[in-house]
Length: 546
Image (cartoon, rainbow, N blue to C red; front, side):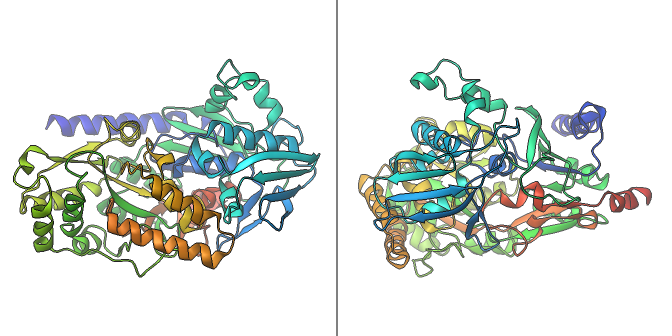
């Protein structure tokens, strides 16, 4: 009873906090606010954040050389055109003139060079896409820049979806002492709480613990629709009751995809609110199995878990309409191989694998801890189902509810990494190689994206070689072989292709994330404010009905 009362009190405090001025900073109400409630935290430095929440802010605050179309194909953006040398080792980009950063300075090739040098040198965030590949960034003239590669990198243009241009002069004016010589901390402290972009929105307010508010950049170099949001506020927190109340009161325009099914059904009954459905991001839910900790260091225990996972119950009851994954690449991601072996629920096969393991007969000494992200309430049901089935074959499962920020920290070292985590991931660029690299190479251990801790030098080499292949068909053939290898190794349970469900105010807004055909298949881009439309007079209609 006490826990229930505490939960209600916490919800009340959140509501008071939101209503008292979060969406209306400094008492000035926006005419066309876009307010979204999602999981937290967010990293606004494009050289740090790799999660969906952070990527949403990057595409609003910054510009990249390229921008995706609705099919995920790279289109000119800051770069008006580009060309590649015959050997694939030099990519030259020709920049548009007259693009201004938020402080009025012009974006030039020097800024592109500085931004890539920073990303490659620090190696954080999406730096792994370019580190050890781009050996030199050369300024040819004020509006021409070239990337010189060590080896061919076939998907470079797609990878540039995760490269954003920083205002070099502004960052250098705010560097502090650090380990990067003349560049000090490379602006790490400054960019943790400030921005240096040229994007369609500027930073207005950022509380690292709770929310971020952006305002429209009225001097943006591309035309902005008059119905674009003039203010964009992203608030952390996804408690179900809070989300429902704020939608009913028209105090938020959209809610993130982590709400449980029961809450989605309730939100769908609110007048003017609909549930957007998106299945084109290539997002896949993994049961990441720690291959360096007992007992999941034994392949037979990992296979027992894969055979003992009730995929049908998960995709037909807990997440109805979802589709079981086939291997490590989600359906629809270019380069994915739909022919790889797919496990199915069979406890007899699971028992056979347990008997083959080195832990057979003493599994009671090796319980498996499953950590699930607290913001995704329905994940607990998956854990409970697996716990019940594993008990039948002698495997003890301990379920640990873990806030996302804590889980990220736990995955930072082998000592604190759980035996198993339930985490979803999306491609950094629209190709299977992105997933193979971010999920399974040694470069990404100590991050939330790889709790498997494979540390497999041969696999690292094979993935690196596959990504170098310039010919697309040959590259995809190499990706296919790697997918078969990973399924045989069984470092993960490939659970389902995730469908995103977003409650949003359909009556008074146009929202690209409402369905896969209207939105971009690259995470974060559909949240770019210049593609969202808000109609305040329609919102007023709904408010006046009550």
